[in-house]
Length: 62
Image (cartoon, rainbow, N blue to C red):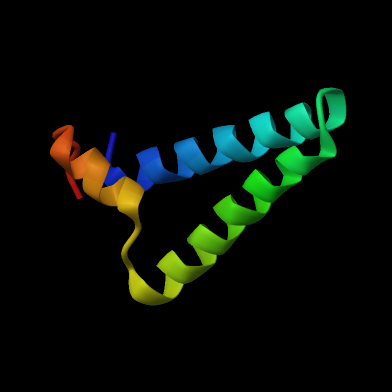
């Protein structure tokens, strides 16, 4: 698995989990969904994301 694939996987899981939590627990979990979306948006322009650094430290290839 590459860094890009891991980033997409993590973002997808985070969005689905936060939407489920918003439906079943508290609507404020949608703030986490917004955070994930904003992070993906900024990483599209800067080509940097904190999760990418973490995945590289774990040994995933770029």
